[in-house]
Each structure stands twice: as C-alpha cells, then as structure tokens.
Image (cartoon, rainbow, N blue to C red; front, top):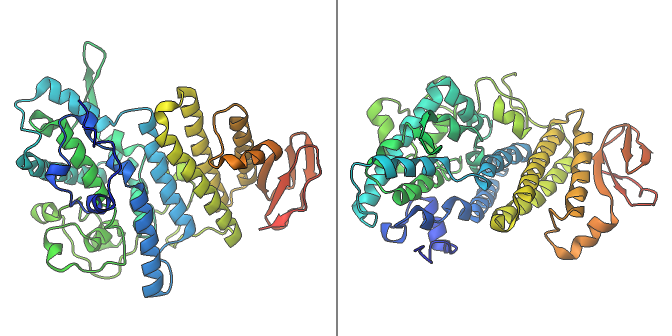
Length: 435
C-alpha cells in the first residue's frame, strides 16, 4: 500500500531542510519506490525563492546582481530540457537499480532503519564522487557533463544548467533479459542494489542532487570548520573554474572528504574564472547541449528584447509546471506536442538572445504553433479569462526581418529597430510598437 503522506506537498520547513540534506530518517523512509515523493519536483518553488533571495542579497551587498538575464535564461532552459524525458520514462537510475535488486541482491537491509539511511547517504555520495570524476576524465561522459560547466557566471541558476544526455552516458547496456527487459547496469551506483532497498536509494539520489543547488553561489564565502567535511560554495567555485589550479578538482557532491582522500582537493585561492576552457559563445539551449574567444560572452539584444524573452520564459515555465502537474490526465499525443512546444519556445528564446538571422522566423512559427495547439485542444490559457486573446488575435510576433507572410497578409517591414506587430484577423495591423 502506498504511504498516503508520500505524495503530499512538503511543508516549508521540510522544503528548506531537504535543500540542505537536513531531513530526518524517520520522515524520509519508505517501504517501496512508488511511495517516495518526487522531491526534485517539489523543490521548484524553493529553487525560485532561493534565486530571488540571492538576487536581493547580491544587489544589497554588492550593488549589482551576480547574474545576467541571458545566462540565467539559458541555465533554466537547460534545466527544463533535462527534465522533459521524465514525462515519458521512469527514472533510468531507479528502474535499473530495481532490476538488479530484484534479480541479484545478496541480502536486504531494513528499509526503515536509520543505519540503512545513513549508510545509503555515504554510499550515494561516494558513488557520485566517482561518477563525477569520470564525467571529467572520460570523453563520452564529459560530452554530456560539459553543459553544466558552460556558464561563465556562477550563481544558483547555474546549478540547474543540466544536460539531457548525462544520465544516459553513465550507463552500459551489456545485454537484455529473455523477457525483453533491458539489463542495464549503472556502473557507479549498481553495487548498492545488492543490499540497499531501492526506496532508500531513491530518496538519497534526490537529496544528493538537491544539496548541490545552494553551493552554486558567490554570496557565501568561507564556512569555517564545515569546509573540512562538506562540499561548500568555496570548494565548488574551484570545481567550476577554468583557472589552471581549478581544473579537475573538487568532485564531491555533499562531502569533500572523498577529494581529500583521493588527492583531488584544491582550496580556493585567487579569483576564479568560470566556464569552459573553449567557450561555446551561445545562449541557444540546444546548442549548449551538444557543444571562441576567451572573453565573457554576452547577448547583444536590447534590454527591452531581453524583457520580452523573460516574459515569454515565465509564461512557458508556468505551462511547463502545469504539464508536469497534469501528466496523468494528458494523452500521449498531447504530452508529446507540449514537449515539442516547450523545446521550440526555449530554442526561439535562445535564437532571440543570440540575435540569430532566423530568430524572427522561429518566433513567428512559435506564435503560430500556439494558435494551432489551442485550436485543436492541446493547450489552454493558464488564465481562462484570457481565452478571447487566442480567439480574436492571430499572433503577437516579434520580428526584425524585411517581409513576413501571416495568414495571407503580406506586411512590409523596414529593417530598423526590433518591433512587435499585433495582427488581428480581417483587420489592418496596429501601429508597430518599438521594443
């Protein structure tokens, strides 16, 4: 039987504590994996709250934010892309772990024992250290992990810049069972499946990830004696640096003791320069997933255009959250179309920030796709009262191209400042508004 408490929202106290790996064994022990809450999904409001708090503190203490709009949007876009596969597939780590547990385990530790809980904490963090180290030292794994290191800023949004591919590059697939079930073995975590229940493993896999969110910041300096044991913002800044002394250092997830034991620890010294040694110089989230000069790369888009992209991203984020919340009620076709629309939106925002030649066409296409999805019932306005906008307006289109066809109307545009045109069916367009 499922634990009725498992799927309830976490309290504010629990939410804050889970971000710092401070939850107690008796409130996070479950008998089956199905009972384990999706803590990462429940952490979304805490991600946003902490990022806003970081922004306020950095503005008060340093007189300016520690982040740039274009870089933050790219990091958040990468994070969203990395979560989309979970709409269709169960977590590959847990699925394969369960297969090994059910077929090859030596013995079973009690799922409700605090000793099992703490042993799993150490086991997951130890396995993460070696996976993270291999992600830097083995090219095929680095191809996925480099996404996380591509930001040239270092703030809480950087923690969310994750790769769609990384989870799959840490696996090997030697064979398949006679029933057609993939026999996949996660080489870094699978030994724990021989004796640690999957439900306990699923809890710590999430907490280990959540802990690493808050250490992506520059507003916290030295934490004193805690620096000896825990992975801290100072230690992780070194890991993200491209200074010579920072390369391939400080791989720990929650604990820094593994780096001290295995010789990969380095303390923070001179100012850290962030990013890849060969910068990608793009804000397109898809190009970030698969790939310059040594200068800080910034978007040449105007401030008002950046505001436009922020607004579009905020609307898309609300749509993304609504999709995850109602996954069970959506058909597979609707789910697939929504995912493709989210990818299209993130790509269009990247095109706009990069000032790519096809940005206007991409954004026009995105606006038309919105109308098509609405017309066929695959999306609905987040605010029902705004349905008339979809019904009475053809599109709101950003463009800086010379000519544009929209629903049979040919509109001649001068290549001047960026403009927003509002088209109304069977009517002449409104006067363009400069942005």
